[in-house]
Amino acid sequence: MEGLSYLFLLENLALKGTAVQSSTHYSAAQAIDGIRYVPGVAPTYCSITDNQLNPWWRLDLLDSYNIYKVTVTNRGDCCQDQTTGVEIRIGNSLENNGNNNPRCGVTSLVPGGSSVSFSCGGMEGRYVNMYLPNIQIWLTLCEVEVYGTAVIEVVGGGGGGQRRELNVLRDDLCLERC
Figure 1: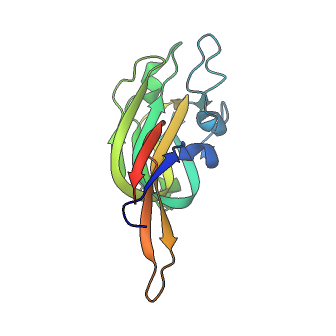
Figure 2: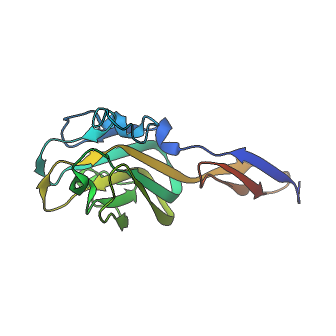
């Protein structure tokens, strides 16, 4: 099998997960529905918490992955500050609702209707949190996309299995050598 190339159709891991948030003005699941932003109908396609202290949103990927990229999309009609200063946290702990997991990045002002991506360098985790600490505000997320690596065990004869990683990094096609 050495030297073979495989073509994988990449996908957004968030679409397979489940989402919850600290409070609900609009459903947490709307941030993982595959719709980044629809002009004229926001915020109905966005996840929004109530106006509260330390709002958070959490994605459960249902399994642990090595996360390489997280993309956050803001609403375009108003309220750009509701995604400013969001801490992206990735890990396997639910301590403090997952908000104590290691930090991948922090958003700055995301222009209305735009997306911003963060490179997370393969951080391992089942949970991806968006957290606004030490502020009372609404947390609005129109879409959260997560791309990472699934590890597959390949059973080999005469010894232990070999581990192969399938990269799921972008929202297009990728050629991966195994």
